[in-house]
Amino acid sequence: MSLKETLQQDRIAAMKSGDTAKRNTVGLLLAAIKQEEIDGQTTLDDTAVQALLTKQAKQRRESIADYEKAGNAEMAASEQAELVIIESYLPQQMGRAEIAAIAAEIVAELGVTDAKGMGQVMGKLMPRLKGQADGRLVNEVVRELLQN
Image (cartoon, rainbow, N blue to C red):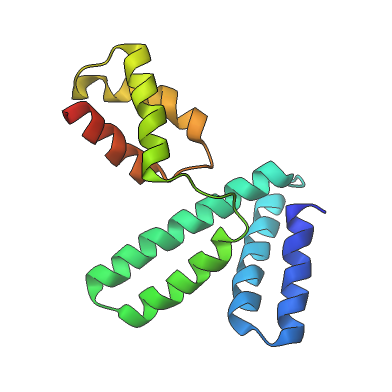
C-alpha cells in the first residue's frame, strides 16, 4: 500500500472513530498532496509524498516557534498535535549523536578545519541525510563541530 493510500485509509478510520484531530490533519495532508498533483499535472509517488510530508512538518515546526515567540500557547499546542501526527508517517529522524558522527566523518574526509568550510560540509552532508534529519539540527551540529 502506498503512503497516499495509507493516509486515505487512516482518514477514513479517524472519521469512524471520531478522532477529529487526526481526521483534520490527514485531510490537510491529502489536500496538499492533491494540490501538488494538480499543479504538477502528475501523480505523486511515495518519495514525492514523503518529501511533501517533510515540508509540512517543517512548516509546523516553524509555526510552533512563531506561536511560542508570540506567547500563543494554545495555537502552538494545536500545531504540535498536528506535527506529531505528520511525523508518524515519516521515517524515524536521526538524533544529534548520529548526525554528529556522520558530520565528523565528512569534516575529516574534506579536511575542513574552520567555519569557512561549512558550505562544503553541508553540501556533502545534506544529500546523505535527506529526509532523515532536520536541517536546522544538522546546521547546529556542523557549526559546533567546526568551532571546536
